[in-house]
Amino acid sequence: MSNSTTSRPIIDVLPLIENQKVGKFWTALFSVSWLVAFLDGFDLQVISFAGRYLKQSFDLTNTELGTLGTVGVVGTLLGGIVIGYLGDRIGRKPAIVVSVAGFGIFMVLVAFAQNYPQLVLLRLVTGLFVGGALPPVWALVSEFAPIRLRSTSVVIVMVGYSIGSASGGPLSNLLIPRFGWQSVFLVGGAASLLVLAAVVPALPESVKFLAQKGLAPDRIKRTLLRVRPGLSLPHDATYVVGTDVVERKQFTPVALFRGRLAVLTTLVWASYFCSATVVFYLTFWGPILNEQIGFSVSAAATLAAGTSAAGALGQVLIGRFIDRRGAGTIAIMPLLAVPCLLVIGFVHLSALAYVFVLLLSNVFIIGGHGGVIGISGIFYRPAIRANGAGWATSVSKLGAMLGPWLAGVLLDHGLSAQGTFFVFAVFPVVMMTALLVLGRFQRRLPATADGSLSPVTAAADGATDVTRPPREETTAAG
Image (cartoon, rainbow, N blue to C red; front, side, top):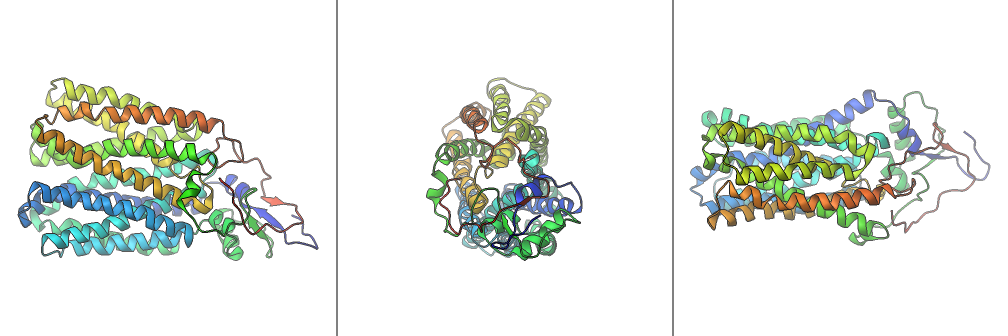
């Protein structure tokens, strides 16, 4: 590394991240991020398994129970925007800490609700923190991952979310009959607060975020030494992210549609919306549909949990292909999901055949959903990445609200539980089309663009011999 008499040495953090090896830093980062996602999935979906007991305890109508599920999704929509903004404003780590503390505290408070209005309010606020947790987590893990593992890193985290969602069924069957519906909310909230004790010391702040904001060079240096132990870094260095310059402008949603992002954002949102519509239809109505098809209450809950586990398998299967071949690869998942949904919708199946096809459909549906999540933030520069992922997540929540509502309307108008499956086969078709177009667009991105499939080719030590300081503002479109 060289220094100049006229400027401080400038170090690009991109090659340092690109050339890292998997070690203690990665293990800690992914373990804690995985736990956050696990609890996020559990806390959001447990209402589906506790719903029957809440309905009995508070004498709720079907509409009131449905509203209770919907307000949680509304909360996640707001949380994705609000806490996504916080993640790009003050950092990924503070946003994650606030989210985990928030959904842990309010999950506990749900257990002490005395009436229906309190339940609604508490689920709304819990949803806000649940929805706000994942976008900064995705941003953080993807920004510490080399390009070859960028989407895979997010998919690994989302496997935790799927397993957390799946655990709600067995845990509800185990706890609620003995200790009441309050028990699952107390367990979820207490576990979240325990994980918070690991989040604070173990998670770092994103060095890409700090560098692009022109913040805390000493903190960047300490974190890079955790990523690459033994690395020699000058004490007076300025850190940058590739050719990007220091960005101090505040985020506005318009930034998500500047330049090439107009196409990328639209396609990501369309894919995410359609995916969430089907996923939340199956998640919310799954236990009820299974009961209507002929399964017992306990078996229906167990089967619903099994579908989440099957989805986790699908996420693992698709994850590595996304980084190698791009977003278009994800389209294979909704393509394969369509015939599964049509078979359930049109063919009279035995119980065993129904279970097999349902599990297989969830491998493709939830696997594809995890794939879309994996790419939801990669096309945005670090300064707006949490916002990009947060807004995509919030748009997807419109689909998450549409799915359960549309299924309810179809059932109320006389369509059978089995028949709803073929109606929802439309959404994977649209999702597949959007992903194929997105994949073609991604393959044409230049190597310098965020989300490009081309690896960073800078020097391994990340140093750049320059004699000028970085500029102070940018209007880059990403």
